Image (cartoon, rainbow, N blue to C red; front, side):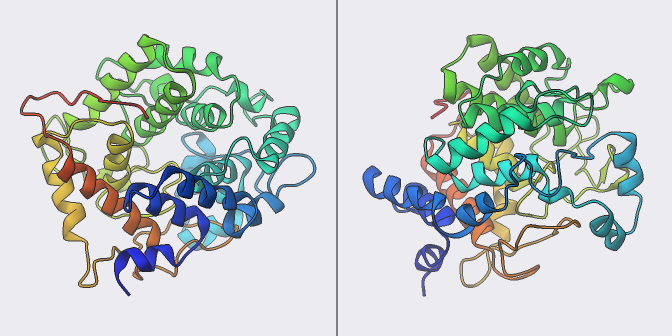
Length: 345
């Protein structure tokens, strides 16, 4: 079985993206396949797990950069998963539905989002879900989810624009004195701003902030420290080894090189020589059968598995890697140091 056929022999959440990004199927065929996400496979299964109070079993906690996060991250991996079912929370459940491509106009999506809007509050101070809270990493994700599903997230966007740091990034530790952006936080915010632009068409200051954020990654060649040029091997946010050269899925709040490149592709950025090393890394992980493995699973409880296990060929990583390589090969590459964005569609 060739790689594309193997990818198509899967869940509707993957099939419609393969059809759109790799086979250039007619739009009506892509739309018909995408519509199945709401009624079949992972999408339907995840919608059915929502409780009547609007929550999924993990509630709304995210445990990213708070004191609880540092304590949780200091635990052995086997205890992390048993103590905090983070990946079954409402936030990450909605993130998965967005990643699956659930049609926001479908009855299932409208019902699920209405329950969240009416009932779900953040643990920080009881803020309504689509009003966000205080940490830009969480707020970036809330913007992405809210904009995708047609909710008003202008207040969160305004806050994020005011929190962009002088290096172009964002950092959840800014309130604790950090003066440098974080790869993790910045990718969350950029994905949110991109989704907001798609939903609203602007305004210009959002695009300007997003392009500054892209430069944050490009100046670091997607994986290096700007100060020394060294590949980042330790995550200063957690003190743990950085696994940015390993490709996980879902990534949740974690950055890795494939996630960063797939964002640039989705944003219509024009690649230049600053992404070449990262693209070479992606290419290097292709196996003899033309597939990419599932690497570095994050500890914690899942609703259900989306791949066949660590080290096995991953459809999610393969479709993302293939479309990144296609984007890089087909987009005329800039010879300047800037990236720019051709489109947000």
